[in-house]
Every structure is written in structure tokens, then in C-alpha cells.
Image 1 (spheres, helix red, strand yellow):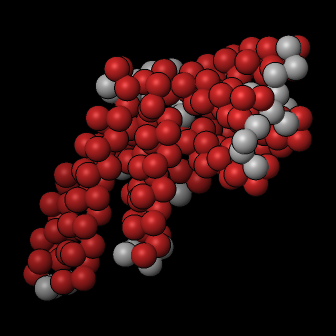
Image 2 (image 1 turned 180 degrees about the vertical axis):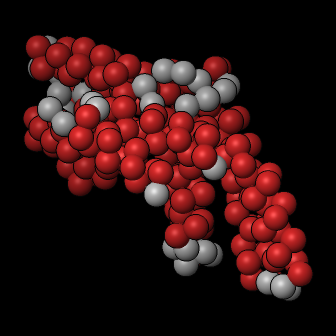
Length: 209
């Protein structure tokens, strides 16, 4: 109820960009701080009630969250591998999505755990992932990628957009993206004007004008 109230206040009184950090802060204060107490009370009830499936699910969710954060941290925090960070994150996300579909039947709880864990890891290094995502898009939208089909390029843009949704430093991304876009257009270096328009349209849908 409190989270819904916060969401409503954002819509009525605040800038749209404040919604995500505000909800995250509310979740931290209202939920995360109390997780040990909730688990302590809830765990006893599950054990006493011999709730095998619920206990399995609790264990599995914790295990997958721990795995994602540990594996993702090695991708995001290794500065020597910055040039491969975005492509490595895309591969990792694709692998998790495949497991979610084939092993977990697109279970909503697992889906949310993957999202939450990804958002945590992609914001471990302030601003750097946002900058590298913008640079990755610049590489893909440049004319050096003319061997890539329109469909492949569109698919890549959609996948990168998923990563973009997780980053908190969207203003940092915007600054780099605008500068790179201007260079591509002024120097005639775009692989496809249709792809440029498509990406701007996607970003507009995500963030507004």
C-alpha cells in the first residue's frame, strides 16, 4: 500500500525520473531492512507447516540471486574488461533468460529476482556502465557495421535497451549518447538513419522527450 502511495505521489507531484530511485529507497526502508525478521518469523512457520515447495522456492531464489550478483560483479567491476562489459552483460542476460524460460517456466518470482539482481550489479560502478552502454550503441550504429542486417541491428538495440532500463545514471547515458549521435550525423557515419530514428523512438518511449 505504501509503495502504491509513493508511486501515486510521483505521478502527481514529482519528476518522472525520481520514481525509480524513490521506489527503490522505499523498498529498502520498508522491506530490505526487515528481511531478517520476516525470514525469521516466516521460516519457522514454513518449517513447522512442512511447506516443502515454499521452502524449495525460498532456497532457489536466494541461490540464483547470489549467483547472478557474484557472476555479474566479476563482469562489472573488472576495469581491464571494460571494452567487453556490455557484450558480456548481454550474453549473461541472454543465458539467464534462457534458463528462466526452459528451467523455471518463466516463473514470476524468478523473473523478479533476476531483474532485481541485475539492477543491483549494473549500478555497482556509478556512471561507468551508463557510459559504456552509450559507447556500445555508438559502435553498433556506426557505418562500420554495414555487414549487419537491419533485423540483427534492431534486435541488438532491443537487447541493449533492457540493460538501459536497469541503469540509474540515465543522465550520464544521455550526455554520451547525444554527443555520439551528433558526431554520427554531422560526419555522415551512421550505418542506418532508420536505425537511428528507431533508437531515438525507443529512448523516447522509455524516458519521454
